[in-house]
Image (cartoon, rainbow, N blue to C red; front, side, top):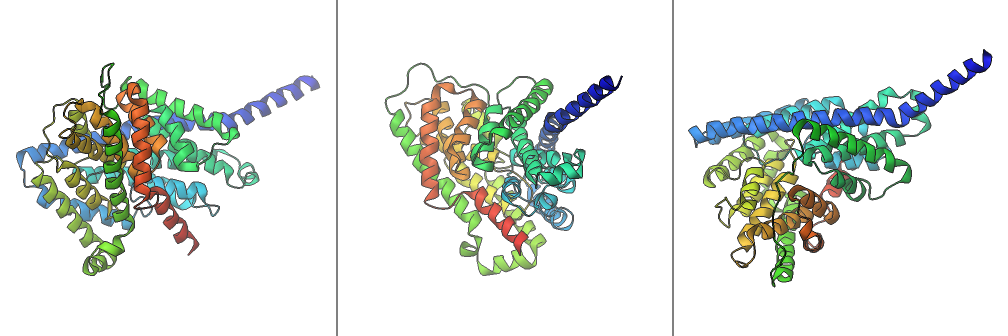
Length: 438
């Protein structure tokens, strides 16, 4: 009887250890998948509502977008500080900090604010994506599951548990957002941690898989941008196109990063003072710029750019060569006020616009091939994470035939971008860490 009681106790202890090591992560991954799908549908609904009133009243954004922009800035500063931007710098800062930044940057309050304010921003036509916020939301959701662990258990690990939870949540968020589980793994290695610990790998992989399965179960098996067919024969000028696309997209992405990181050097002093002293008024001004660009472009610069990128890949879009420049300007105007919103999807749209413009030079090449090169080039230039970028694009377009070309373009663009600015997310994450120390 005593032996049976001892065996039962040992079994319960083993089950409890397995629950702490795997069960909480799996539960969190399922929750991240559900939230990612719900958030994606919310953003799609919001942008659909925006398009409805733009179709009826073309000039209405000139009034609505500045008002919504001011409201978003007020809400972010008043109730949700730390939720601004894509959210990836906050996650990186948390993972690299030993000062408990997660309790400030990965709270449930910020999770709610990220979803709420970005939804409001997309109702105003902001040039933002949902993928970066999904990563932030996933990390925050998983980070707060630390409450399932005894305080003694957490203290023994000195913050390592919280970092593992945040890492798994961020990677699972990317996997569910893009239906790209491999990209989630690579993103966690290349961008978030710059390393891959053996103890973390199994749990991380299972979290990504669980989140991906949940997203697939609800939305079905799909590729983000569909499937492109480039045929069995590659054009003779493919190598030239790869190099030129990498240089142009890398330069454009590098300029974008420089502009975001060096506002003190290019903004007029009067605007800088307004941004510091009157951030809500500054936000309204940025909203007016976004609206003016959107009206001028015929509405093509509003939103994430997913529709435009998809239409370009399907060869249904008729956009001018100015589209990537206008989209980039709208993207900068959306980011500067500090409104929550991601950079991934707009970057892919800008890259698609670059590929579309280069078709004027390489008219004998298939347009979808050039667009895919432009997408991976610009995304790699903005993130300076070439491996993550080409894996994301491959999974989004099912473009395995272009693996070498996409990889080469991403590497060239990333190196060119470094000539202009350091890695954007890392530089921004260092600012969050610096604020914590001061």
